Image (cartoon, rainbow, N blue to C red):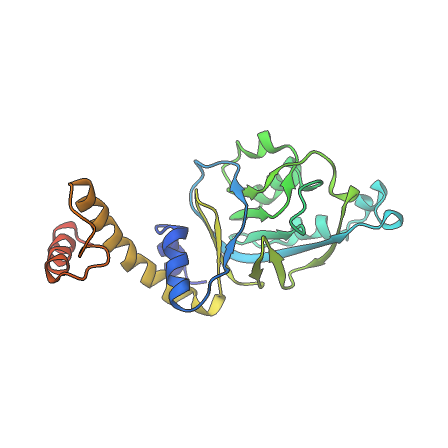
Length: 236
């Protein structure tokens, strides 16, 4: 991802991004039911690095498997690139944790941009204090081994019903997390920036008491004229 694209995406909302994606026929790019543990964290932007869980089988998931340095969960934490977002397919099952405070802290210390799971995190009060954005469904104390087996690193996954391919661009804010197909990221970032300027103009006018009719969308010529003048005055 270009640095310019990353910088632009940090300044737009997931709501605006969803609209830009919808214009291209993409309806299911929002990861469903995930929430930020630390809503005050900055907007999360990074390329997807994925980890997939499958249902655990008891003879394969004793506590001793964590002693293996090649265990996929441990290996993924150490291989997720700085600036990327780790996206975990936990089968929308938060009955057991996808990870805990120590692993999330390790991701943060390695410079990862954020972490998302459609399951839950243990040690969630600790994770909520971290500077790195983290998203999950709800807190979950049991170790992942009780229900999940980490089976694949950096392959295509589903997370909260959204398709996620390695390298897709993941953006998270207070509303949630959206996944932008990699080949669309540059143009979506530019379009969303333009949309945000117009939405900021509309918000300002609505707060001044103006009707949305003819303004949003700008079907009246006067609205388009006013927006052009507003942009010039604001340097937007």
